[in-house]
Length: 359
Image 1 (cartoon, rainbow, N blue to C red):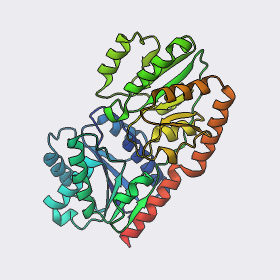
Image 2: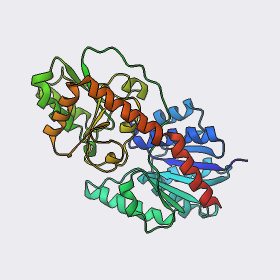
Image 3: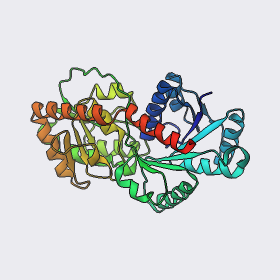
């Protein structure tokens, strides 16, 4: 019998699909294809994400009726009582807390199960998030291996044995570019404060006078800031220049944008950048976290200081004025992802870590 790998996944909300969720989707697709390990996905309350895994025939369970982390952990233990789990693989703050509770409350089944933690990035922009990060790092003591998706995060866990850098990788997907009368700048991702989608509106204001009839800004995603962003767009008379499209399939997103704009204050290795580069879409991004490991400045996009709104606007101007540059950047980014950042490469590295902790 193939070893079962339990992937504990905690979406950021009941409706939002985040980068860590798509990371696990692509990783487990590759695990199923390789047939060395059998993945089980366990998540709480997000039926939309469960549907994604089900569509790929990946076994998943969802504790949608669990009102607390304690009832959820008890539910996991009950639901998987007849499964011989060989590895726990936890992804994210809440998933790590769940792992620790499983081992504490039900030691006879879970305490000795080898555990891997993948850190998709720490967010420390508020006192609460700083406290959550400390608890998250405490959970790392109970893992046999640790993975970071961003090279610059490796230093925080290097004191532990078996700490690894494994960048995100994506499953290849097909896009069909559409005919558009305007150049579309896309923001793709969660509409949350650390992602700073409000900067997109500031950049749009910088460019409106010169390009109002030539370009559009589109938001693809949902999140807590959506009402605020719509209110700002209306107050600044940007409603015909900035559009909110909600969550879409990635094939639909990248078939309909020409440039990706990433405005985050903090990042690990954002999947949206990898997906855009794979889709031959140039990127204008803030120079934070692991973004410089993905975007080669002046070759696949432009890196700009996170507070430099005019710099972002000027980078977009350069790309607007040169179709050749957009094409050149797109080809360079596509080749880089195909050579360095596929899900198969990611799964191969993770599989070696599985074998290490099971040996």
